[in-house]
Length: 315
Image (cartoon, rainbow, N blue to C red):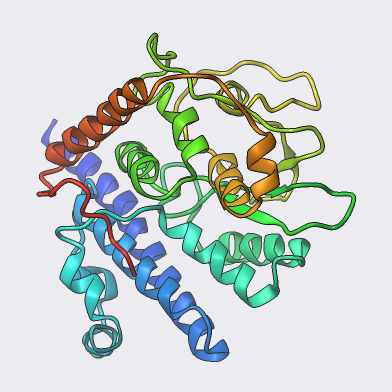
């Protein structure tokens, strides 16, 4: 019995160590892209904080020293980016780390070069990062691209799925709702989150105007992905093929569509004005937001993270 328990513990620690491996690869890649291009320093700052935070609350906690490993690199990193070291124990990130990787690729390739952006992210995942079952630490599985119209080659807005484990994922969804996403996307997600059933007192789900593009792709092979049941409930997205309903294993707001549509609605005033949203009063919206904030506080308390409400990290 003791031998089996020891083997399980060893296997658990081996699986958890893929967090450290992926974290170091992602940070090193971001540093290299920043140094080579001179672009994206704030994204590097943000991703370091996000990864350090997730290391802190990981099932097997990882300090910055354990993640980086190399003392010389750690000293240089602290010199260039002191704020993540100062705030990863007190401030919650507004989004998951892979969103910063995505933004870096958009910055380097240009928002119009969709195929290059998707291929670069795919190459990073397939060539370097541990992505096997139970080892997908910090790795997004889906990217979404939104446009106000495909007819005039309009600006593309990107988003990726939450790159974190089950409990951290719920934390990051709540944080994004309270601090990062466009209010229409937040309202839609808050309609269901933290539960998987619609609130009786609040409905902030939306319907996009005709002609808006919102397409998701699997980052492992770049195949098209139909919106899941959750995204159809939130944003009234339509499927292209007949799909089977599967068990919901992630929270509302986890999918790449949320971040992509948030970026679209933040930047395209005409699209937002034409987006249909269910009616509600301000008191009910505040009640819904309070429920999300309460869930965030509870989740952080469970992982022994001391947090002062609304302390979200700004790079």
